[in-house]
Image (cartoon, rainbow, N blue to C red; front, side):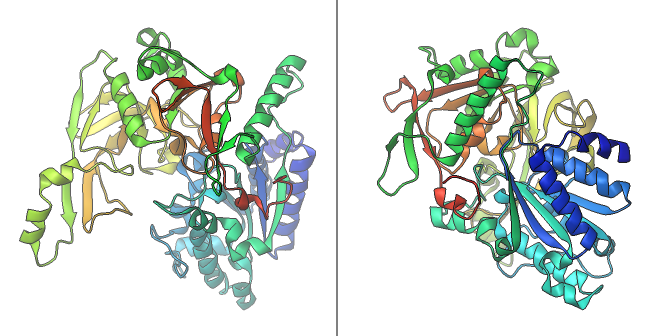
Length: 502
């Protein structure tokens, strides 16, 4: 562990070293503190987390790395999602507390913890962070009564993330509510020491001057999109939506049927390369809504010449109460089967051996089975589906995916609805929100409708590290391809972040 630290430390740039020494100083003094590290993709936040973990663990100190999403958690050494590590309730409010009790193993672990690293913090609702803060103050007060007055019970906490990316998802919430749910609108933010990483680590001395120039210009364009600095025509006088012209090198025009054209562009020679895992893991089609994603995935599924295996879910109503017959008549099984929700797999799941799928639940984060993990189906059995992990640190490992019971946490229906199904969905295409945290070589951004939320366009174009890997197809209202689209940025979310130039 010490050798890994020494090797990584030599590779840190000056900005990373400032953060590194600040964190180590806070841990050494054992007085706690909150640190926020803001930086875009490619600025080396994950590498910094790995270096800090290696340093403190080599000194036999306990570090708990967590992330707001399963994909980000997999990239951390020994990482877990924040919800699973701290037992955060699925529904949180300003009074919620974590489900950790005094005297339990996790409470004893927290008593000995020197550092908590919380990656992708901006996409977490501030109530969840305040919930953990509230609980840790109580848990750590057993060691020292003064700790109940310190943030997170006196444990040093390092938050990381990029406020240009997607903010907490709150269904049908207005702009003010979304911005108000972020960490920098919490009382905790006043106690955060904020650092900004600006140096792009993708610019390497080994690259040619031309390569570094191209990467630099592409990164600057991405940041302009993320900061809302792309000039264009405002869609509404008081709106954050701006219509702008996309550089011609990224725009794809075609007279063919749009889904077919995008498929041919992003998945060339698919029939011969559909079994190559390197080919599959490096590309995806991104689009704003689940409806379009389903259409694209069904189209590609039909291109695969293999036997189709169909799995039907078992749907039921939970806690029917006394008036069971009335509920049965109002919500028959056929109606429950017809319900499609973004957080649940479909009632009728159609898969084939060799198809790319995405996991929709955290099954085992230690083995890399997280919500958002992409896999390839290797065998279809009666009561399980065998899959091989396609991306991440656990690539190549095979696992049996079982049917599990899933209950949506936020629905418009006045019922407790449960669906028992394989937590999988076809994943040649995915929503922009789902792609956050993924890294790809080739991205097709398909926009039959424009983005509708802060950071969506920035997240989509920043999945690739090279401009050669980005292809954007935009459809205008008249059904023809266009080079203009809408960017949505809530600039007020940047106001209390230093060095954002907003």
